[in-house]
Image (cartoon, rainbow over all chains, first blue to last red; front, side, top):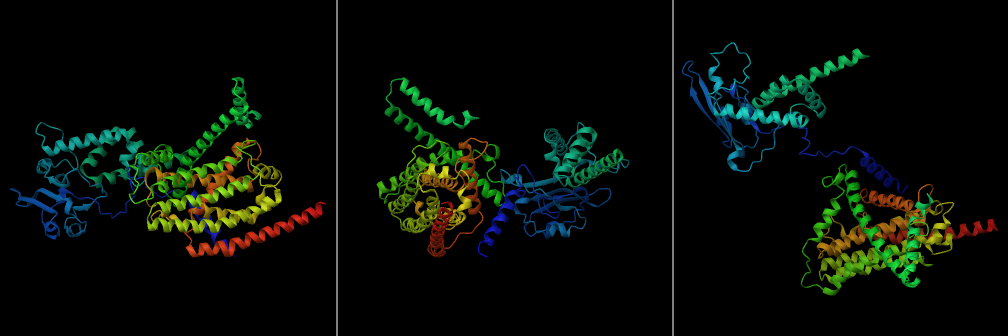
Length: 238
Length: 348
């Protein structure tokens, strides 16, 4: 019969009219990125063995590194590592070829900067790495040293970053935390945990400033623990 | 309740009485009231258009699973205001080779005609600027005048594309004028009057959409084409053409055409609810609120149709008018005549 197709079409658009909108309001709401999304390249400095394969494999000469021999062990050690993001085409060759799995793509895609020099990222050897043999008793490599008088530039930077993160956390915890967990709800839960326990917040911020991936893992662990606890509570209540 | 119902009528009565108490003769007082009524209509039109353009964008967004404008004000309600300000501040460009007089008068004429449509619309109980005994005829004939304004715009632009766009509009609008007028004949036959207040009064018991469902559908289709709205928006298909007859227009002149089209949309929707949906009649709420509700429902229907269906091809458009709509409306008139004859025969 004539016209049934028209009615069908109108039914579909009416269904869409009342359905949930799929637009992501980007600056306020972060898009949910796929797991293997190739965002900003970063290096886990401690894991790098300074073999230089990444610099050789990079087709665009994005990567460069500076190395030196350790006086005691005669091993190669990394002094500084430079990623010039403006030439990176996210081809994944360096990540694939890294023998110690220290190069990764993060989910950070907001890479625009006001000038060209800011795009280049230079990692310097953190001073505590050279003190490792002296303090074998400290198992947590991620722990930052106490702020002392001989603070290097890097440590100072990290201190500043941590402070900035802490204030951001106080201001809008959900927004900051949603980058580290899977969903807004989880971020909400995490925010509550952090507000309840200040030490946890400090620990998390330190990780955030230091190692995004680790921070993410810890955040997810926090949330899962809390969720389980809540579930237990509700079950017990019933 | 009664106070709210007759609020506007009371206001105008009170105003006339006040002017007379100041020693103004009745004829003059009426003239002043007419001026105020005109200003009210312009106010209604502008307010409605502001809402309508925002609504159109919201509806189109929602239908495409987007949120629509949502930055300026809550849910983006001030988006139209910002757009209007932007258009007002634009440079007034008149291309050098245009026929200046025609180019300038075309949008003004278009808008004037659109505003004139509102004179006969009953906007509530006893709320009509002029209750013409040929109200419906007045509405249809004025509606067809907009064709001239469009053609003037196309001709005055002195641009072949504008002229072609205008000709397409004219061809389409004239073709659809016929089913438009014919589909209303059934209503007129039942009522026996062209006066809009009579038509509303005749729907006291049953709305004409139930007595004349085919006329409602054909009028709706013809009105969509007459308004140059999708799926019949060939003359100015935004995605495919450069605005048709409006190609050379910019800034506020372009906005005037745009406003006039939305003004027509409101007028036609109001007429549709007057003729087929019982006009201002309805329970509980005051009459002027009923006509607003019905008009907005009809406008939503127009938008819903526009954002659902793909654009129809030009030859199909013409064939549909001449080969489908006109025969159907003619048959409807004959059937209505028979129905009336039999009904009167039974009734005595």
